[in-house]
Length: 481
Image (cartoon, rainbow, N blue to C red; front, side, top):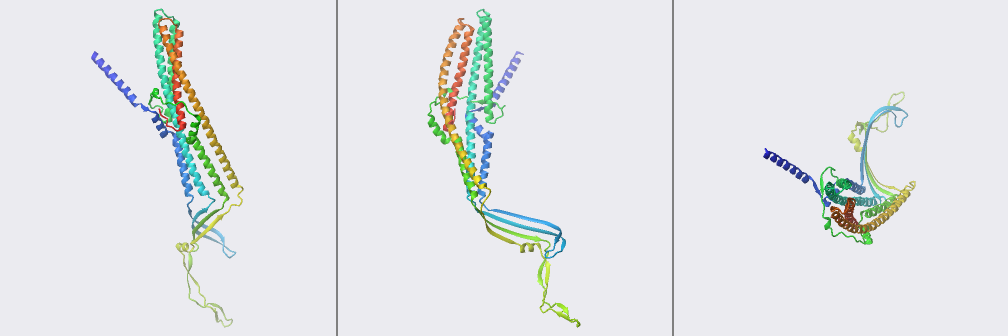
């Protein structure tokens, strides 16, 4: 009986361990590089930018096709019925007829003030702008992913620290309970220890919630199901000895101005608007085109045509009065012989062609060309200002980032010293508290100071890493941990 019970317990334990192992294995491990790769592959904003690239490519191809000739064909047919005037007479007749015509027209633009060529150049620049926008979005996403990833690591360390603080508070509560039972501490001391446990537990809950939120944000960047379990790989931050904290702001600015996506995008947009001025000026020039066409018609009213003539014959034009002798014409007369006129023959006989040169000279078009050029020039000036604004903002941001990195490094060094001091103070206070030389209020104060300094040091350490990676981002370096 006992063996069966132990056997069932062992079997149940084995099942639990197996399920736990499967759960852990089911969790996907996410490294920083994996997070960046999945974000760039799945993020909807990146996909939307690629669609805009495809649209820009289509516009460029169409502007090239616009140099080709245009060929159009058309046909028309219909029944006509009712009263109409007889040609050459003042009489009317009622009739029904079917008429049809067909034509084809070819046109080729020879000259249009350079508009077609300039449009190709502008669309090529616009495509570069779309590609630059995609690059900017990718760079911004990489920076956001790195920021969120570091926030996850920070929150993980804060959760670990909170768990240690809970363990420490529970140990203190256990000792206080023993001391209270033997009469060495008061009820107030015991209550203070219980409050310390509650505070530590609340801090753990808050830290865990912040961790869950940061992981959720990371999943959103990767377009993952928010309920998919993942494990964010924790690199050994203590081994990151190559974190550079001293930079020359001017050198960083000069390097960033040549590679920063925001500045490059503004410069490409400026070139696009500059090209638009040339396109607008083409409205001042004439348009020269070559054209040619084919056409033919058919009508069922023309169902007969002359197919021959009768032999010449003298026709009677009168009689001799009194004698009744017929009077004949002096010239023999022939008469037309009519036969059926087929649709094929009509189309063949009515077939005509045309070929010519068309010149359209703009003389006065309500100042449309003048307004278009003026607006294009203003847009170009605005683009120049946007480029300078982008450069100024980049310079300010980099200078601020360098100052923030220096301040973060100093804060981290101070946080390390504060943590070491509070750790020593807590050890001494704990020893004196265990032998009754310090009351619970002083001990809890030492614990609180230790916990706060530990959290501050963790956050300061990741702040230094993050600020350093920001500079790497502006320098165009690959961000890794």
